[in-house]
View (tube, rainbow, N blue to C red):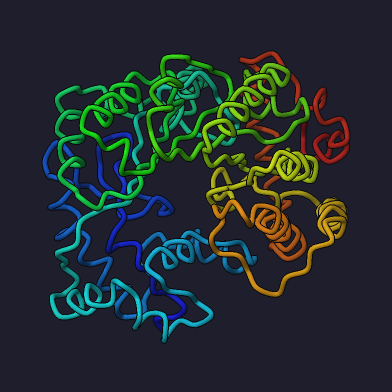
Amino acid sequence: MTLKTNFCSSPWFHMEIRNSGDFGYCRWADEGSAVNIRNETPLQFFQTHMATVRNSMLQGKPAANCQRCQDMEQHHKVSGRQRQLLKTGVTVDNFDKSLRSSTYWSAFAQSNLTNGTTDQVPVDWQINLGNYCNSACVFCSPDYSSRLAQEFKRLKITSTDPGTNWAWDLDLLDQFVASLSNIDQLAYLHFIGGETLITPAFKVILEQLIAAGINHRTRIGFTTNLTVWDNDTVALLKQFDQVHLGMSIECLHSINDYVRWPSEINSVKNVLAQWIKVGHQHGWYLSLRTTPTALTVAHLPELYDFATQQNIGIESCNFLHNPSFLRMSVLPQSQRLAIADQMQTWIDQQYITTSVQTINVRDPNQLHVQNMQDAASYVNYLRTAPDETHLLPDLVQYLKLLESLRSNCVLDYAPEYEHIFRSAGY
C-alpha cells in the first residue's frame, strides 16, 4: 500500500456531527463513531479519538468506511479525498513533492510520532441538524427524513425510530456554537438535515454565529430541497460574507416529483429560480445537488445543460451506495449504454478539451469544465460498473410498497421502464 493511493489529509482539519449527536471523522464516510456530543467535546474527539484514523492514513492504509471515495476515483469522479487533499496543498498527480510542501506537513509529522494524536483543531465541519424533513425521497433513509421514518413504520419496514436529534437540545446547541467560536481559523461550516429551512436549529445557529461575528470570517454552506422559501432565513444568510448553497434536485422532468416525493416540479422550479436570483445577487456559490439513481439518470444531460447555462455547478456527494437496488447499475446494459451515449453527446457539444482533472470543483471560473467532467464520470460508471440487474425485483418490490401509501405509479412518470419493470414483477 502507498500513501499516494490511500492518504487523506482530512482527519487533520475536518470532522462531522451526525443527527444523533455522534461525531464522525468524515462527511464522506458511511458510518460515524459511538462518541456523542453529550459525553465528549468536539476537540477531545478530534484530537484523541480520531488518532486511529490518522494512523491508518500515515501507514498508507485506507481508514474504515473510505469505499465511497475509492469508487469515485475509480470512475474518474473528483472524490472527497482529492478535494480535502487540495485544501492542504496536496495533489495526487504530484503527491510526494506537494505532500512535503503542504502547510500541514509538520502536523502530519507530529501525528506520525504520537500514534495519530494531533494538536490541530477542526476548522472544516459537516453539521447534521436532524432528520426533520417534509420530503420522503425514495433513495433516502429514516435517519435523514422524519417523513420517510413515519412511512417505514406504517409499512412495517422498521419498528424503531431513528433516535433523538441532538440539535433539538438548545443547551447542546449553545455549547456547540461556543466551541466553534473558540476556533480562530474556522474555515467552513456546512449544514444539512432533514430539510434545513424547516429545522428550527438552523435559524438559531445562524443567529448565534452572527452574534459571535463568525459570519464575517467563516464560509457557511447548506443544502435545501427546493420546497421551502423562508424570508427570515434568507435575511440571516445575507449577513454572511461567503455562502455556499446546495439545491437538491434530481432532474427537471416530472419524475423528480416521484423520486423526491411529494414535491411538485413547477413549484420546485420556481423556488430554484428564487434561490438562483438571490444567490447571484449576493455572490454566493451555487450548486445543484443530485443523487442519480436508476430512475433519473437518463435525465441528467438536461440538468447539466441547465446548470451550465445558469452558471452554477452540479455536485453529488458520491455514487449512490444504498439502497443498492436504486443504483444505476441495476439497469440492463443496453439501457445503460444508451444513456451513456446521450450523456457523451452532451459532453461533446461543449467543445471543451482538457487532459487535466479539475479538483477544485467550487472554483467559479471552472464551472463549465467541472460540469463536463462530472458528467463524464457517469458515462464511465454506466459503461463499466458491474451488472446488478438481479436487484431489479427488489427495486420493484420497494417501489410498490411505497406506492401503496402514496397512491402513485412509477410508470406514469417513466413509461419507458415498463418492460423492464413488468419483467421484474411490477
